[in-house]
Length: 57
Image (cartoon, rainbow, N blue to C red; front, side):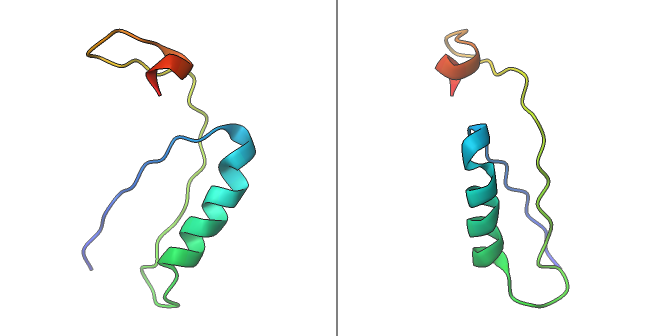
């Protein structure tokens, strides 16, 4: 089966809803529907401007 990886960064208060929506959209009931991993993002940097954290998102 071909695999894809999608990464999404959202505020903590959206994590459960985003995971629910993604799971509902991706679910076929077949092997290979995928997994959702939730991890903290400690920092972000926009390379072009050097902006950091919230400003970089």
